[in-house]
Length: 359
Image 1 (tube, rainbow, N blue to C red):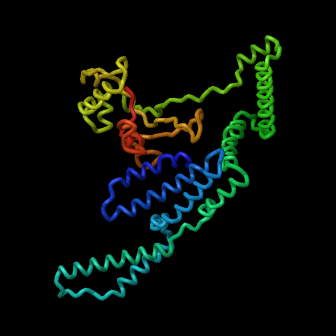
Image 2 (cartoon, one colour; image 1 turned 90 degrees about the horizontal axis):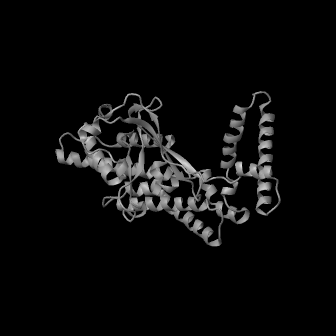
Image 3 (cartoon, rainbow, N blue to C red; image 1 turned 120 degrees about the horizontal axis):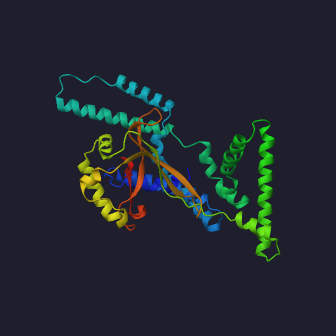
């Protein structure tokens, strides 16, 4: 959810970038509402605060309730839908029947007026019955006071406990003998913690110039206590067995080999180094082996981190079902031009994956 806040506003801005004359004000209110909530959420994740940052948070939280009414029509519950249906039936029952002797143009105007009345009554009922009155919305108003009294919000996050449960409890259970596993897990991590503390103390003594035995120095050199940066790269996974060459690839995508080659050759010429460029001869290119894959792992720096990455998995199954449902072809950000284009999007545009392949 934290990473969602980094892209949701840009996606919404692209989706609402061409409003009509009647949509201009609602679209603007929707963007202001989402911008205020996203700004509040991102600033709440700061690890340190000043009076100025807390004031910013309060201002964003004051803006959000003023604009959130634009989303009330999407807060329709089953109870409200039942009331809407009942209201519609009552209106149609009380409405006098249209005479067959009226002119077609007049009957058409009457039907338009009736539909307009139903829509207005429906929206009035939605705005009267829908609300954002639930616990998580009330909790936002306590964030600023919490920061003043106890410090930053991430310090009390449950994410660390959940991560420890995954990396310690679950991993420890798999490594145990499944007999009195709790004691084995505690003893194992106690030993690991003790060894880690011992290595850190010896490393600190060496930096201070203490006289250590050659065996200890050699052990410190082989067992470094410095965590290397988590450098990651994009990885393709989930190879499909039904594609081995360009002909199979063309058949699965439903695109001719000529069109694929016309797209690949210019891309190779403009984006790849000379030693990795594809052959310009379409016949040679069509004879190369091709791997079709279904998943791309994309490392994204975690919020306010320089060495910790979150892995985003983009999936593209083309026409195959994903987990017994329909096909899944995710949308991703694509760099379309220089960073000074498209404003806050910095040269990126959302696009839908068609295929993940490797030549």
